[in-house]
Length: 318
Image (cartoon, rainbow, N blue to C red; front, side, top):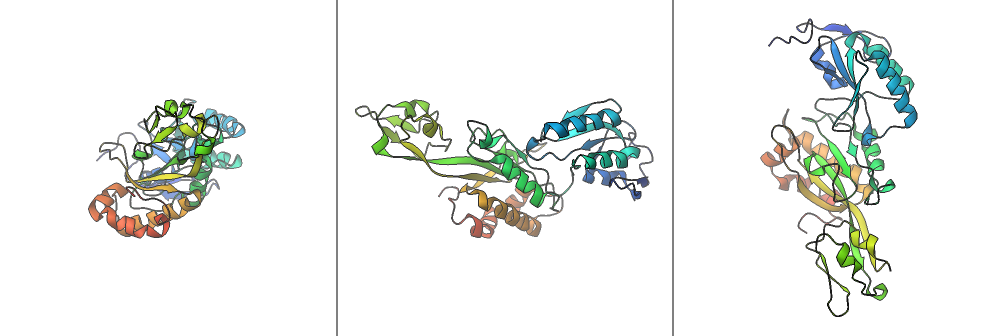
């Protein structure tokens, strides 16, 4: 098929993209894997930057703005839906100089293709009142440990700090959502009924005689609203962790992820991702998202493989 948006598409061209100035023959199709995405306009590309968790220092943001102003033919950037900052309208002949200037400020280019992508994350417990887990710390860990790891298809991860799920963990290949298991201590309870009023899930009712809570764990979504609302600290956190979801995706044929574990602690997240990637690489077909691999091979195979990581955390339905 003829591509009218790129000149000389049928042959490889000499492009320097590594920041050293060294030229190499690269097919335009291969550039996307390195974070250089072809645009409709001839010879112009989007340069996708690596921003784990959507976080940048103000100093770096200013410097990126200067680089974008210098090399974007229209002087614009785009914030992608997965929190990447993209410099638009960059001529491929200037890749080397663009990358070199980005490297000077410590900014790396992202990547596309069949590999682990840059993780996305909400603000988490660092500053968000609803946050239960340190999502930014987790995203940074995943980016440093797993970014670029080859997989049969793209592999997207995200971290939400609470059940509001701003990072849409149900739409990711592997998603982690923060949760807290509430524990009630009767001695500190005054029967004020504030917790039942604060619970949006109707998981807490107030005893009509004492005012003390009647808790329904089936309705609880582990948001921690009761803990935050309790004036006497009768509701306390029993444990924090992550609900782990697997096999989600959006796009033309969206698929909702399945819940595979509850209350996975922070220290097990890296192990869970590594073992999931191992299973995916062993069972997935080229060009197959992990959700489709689960459908074809079976969830039981995956859960059996993950027992060393999930065994001390509550599995879905447990």
